[in-house]
Amino acid sequence: MSYRIPSPPPSLEELAKRQQNVITAGQLRARGVPTRVVSDHCRPGGPWQRLLPRVYLLQEGEPTPEQRIWAALLYAAQNGREEGQRDGAVITGAAALALYGFAAVPRLPALTGVEVLVPRQRRLKDAGEVRIRRTARELESHSVHGLACAPVARAVADALREWTDAGEFAVGAAGPHLVRAVLREAVALPQGRCTVAELLAELIEADLLGDLLIRAALDELLAAERESTIERLGLLLGELQLPAPLAGPELRMRGGTYIAVPDLYWPQAGVAVEVDAELRCVSAGESAWARGGRHRLEYVGVRVVQLSGRRLAAEPETVGAELREALALGGTDLVELVATER
Image (cartoon, rainbow, N blue to C red; front, top):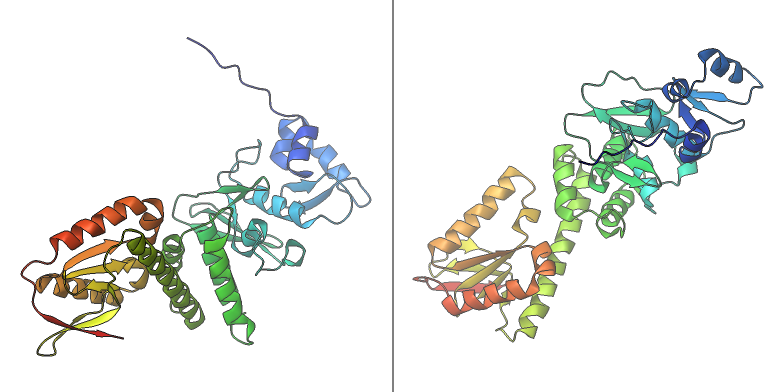
């Protein structure tokens, strides 16, 4: 049996270097610095300064934006006595987006506040420029420049809620542009990238889709994502030399009864394809509408294939084989339908 010898905690100098000279009272106490010494050093003209309750900057002068964010994170941390034990708090909102490198949000020096996400049961108040946001969900974090940040999708939702609560979308033309830019960057960001589905889930969880600006920007993003997937699917069909389908036709029975509008449809085979159906089913009503169309297609004998953009990108060969098989099998007891291309 082997035993792992625990490594000694870093010295005050090492810890200060890791945390950009921002230290908590607990960390100082754990390294033998008496409270009296801390008080003396933080007096006017002293070498240290108090940034937030129980959080200190071991230098003179104005703190940098990064040091202010470190102070916010350490203030809200569940256990700030040792480095690495900051699981009880993550940076979120506009501050996290700035750290991720979003071009649409103000740079760190221009930020006027830092939002920190903590578990719901924490008893913690806002302090200075730190705003506490609580969640009943388990905290997730990504390390960005050594700081614990909420995942991109969660940070975007919190930033939009922050701006909405502050009334920043109430006036001016910057509102729609800002929302669109942030949503687009979220799914295009090379590092810490999130999927459209993850972003949609967070916006629904945050109850933000009632805001007309946010909903319009989201609909625009979802439509672009689905169009991109359909375009990639068209290229795959060409590579496999499969018959060209009708794109987005309106299907009705001979008597005029409406059936559905699938994304792709092969009338000879009686096969339809729905792409990323969940991305256009934001509300319960939209989900019911999509399910109804699918059920009507299957009722009249159409074989319905459901595809996602993520799976198409990850498994194009498998998707191609499934489509080939579906076209070979065709529909079952297919009712004659009239397809009108829109």
